[in-house]
Image (tube, rainbow, N blue to C red; front, side, top):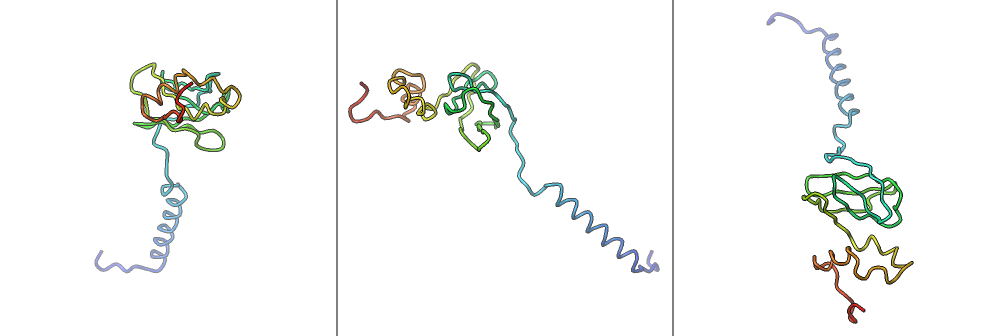
Length: 139
């Protein structure tokens, strides 16, 4: 080995192989972010809720009857429709739980203003300290 000469063809071949290898690595998308959560595609029911692993989560009213894409991570889940992200919820650990966000039902309040009083979403938000009644209080 000590006495072997390196000819220009060997160097050119090695450089070409390295360039091809580098190009293949760039094309494989190794530098792009990848999804680490588990993906589900539930349909929003008539109550504007989706079911993911026995638990129910609210989505905006406009999605009733439509399929959404849900990415379930270790501590939370993110809901997407065709236009982008529409909801984010902390994951429920117990089975058959329900996590409702009052903002998801605002569109329904325009049509039926009194429908929200006594609703489960309102009770959850109130107990979590997310909702403050107006200066007049509940009617």
